[in-house]
Image 1 (cartoon, rainbow, N blue to C red):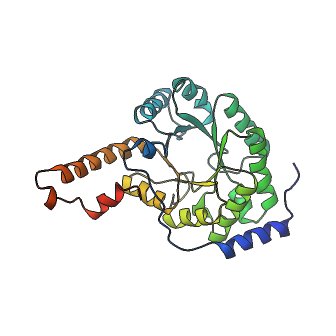
Image 2: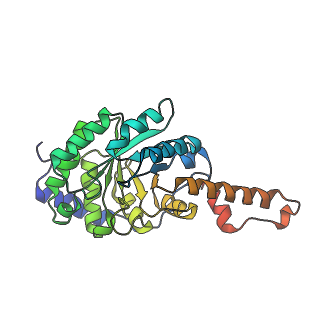
Image 3: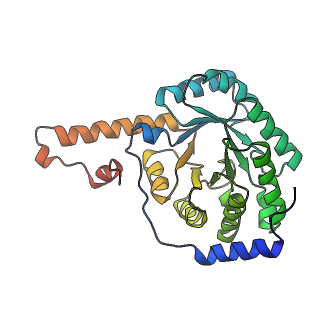
Length: 282
């Protein structure tokens, strides 16, 4: 595969993106907590190496129960997840080059091809962030573009930047390279290497990607409040192994709000401002 840009062209694109990006704290609209739209923002994930067949079955059962967007698993479990989720609306996502990102190009392409052949409709590929930090942009691009080539649309391609290991400039570079390779999402973190998603990094990523491209926040997201913070910062997908707890928490909060506004003392029983905001669509 030929390089899309020269090194100087890559640097010019990234420099311009850094110059143009906005630091304004835009608050993006979020789905109503506990709604189907909210559940459909969650990638229900189980990525530990020691995962068992029973745990994968449970993951899929939970995804069906709460109607999550997808389950996210390693390659060895894609076949089983696909079988479990036949005739449902839930996608199967597979990680590629996980979690180090430093696997060879041939290994990443083989893994991506095997995942798609097994029925995965979404791929979460870890960027080669050591090469990104070294500003070897053509090699980073080739990695992502080669996976995109083996897994064209409608397969959804998400590029994990591993933001905890990067400077702001590196994050911008990763976003622009993923964009050039026709990825659908940029994603904050693997969840296995340093700090996970932060509002600051989600806002940065959202501010530099083209219209139509999306941000996935992942790593350390365990509560409804954390989900909302990431969505308000610009994330449209949440990767978490705590999806069930988050939905249970959302249902409890919804019951609290319903009780507060529907009780006998309705006029004197307004829900707190934070709850009101959380259940607003704006």
